[in-house]
Image 1 (cartoon, rainbow, N blue to C red):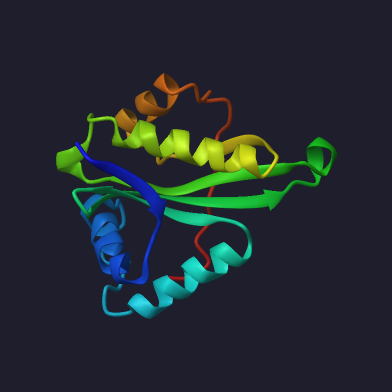
Image 2: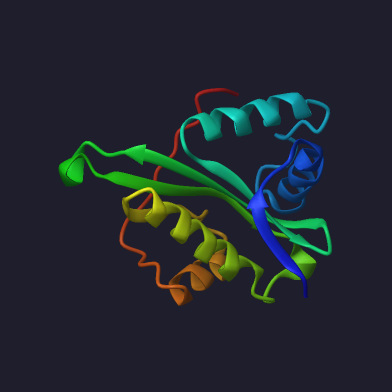
Amino acid sequence: MDLVLRGIQRDEVGAAVALIEESTLTPGVEDPERLDLYWEAVLELRRRDGELVVALVDGEVVGMCQIIIFRHFQHTAGWCCELETVYVRSDRRSGGIGGAMLDFAEGFARARGCYRVQLTSRNPRLDAHRFYVNHGYEQNSQGFKKLLVD
């Protein structure tokens, strides 16, 4: 397997949105007709020292992970890394792609002086929870979300 991990390019945005649509727990939320908005989000992420990493196998987008870097008020105002939008295409799971993306994200965070990497995973995603625990993540918090739009 020829795996490449790097920041997303503009012409890969549609494939990344399709990847989300394949696995989402909230179907109908994404709008593949509005790729310009997704690209604007990538540019904003980069302005804030983050990245949307894609996993490519033979040049095809098969995984993605959004890396958000922010400064905490706690931990003596230390830098923190949040992982969001972690997806591996269903036919490519259990092949090391997800682990490679986590390693990439952790290296990215370390290079920026982050003291911690954190993420949330939806309650029904039990396989994902096992995956994160197997990669050294500790399930030590309960997450809460509140939608502000209908």
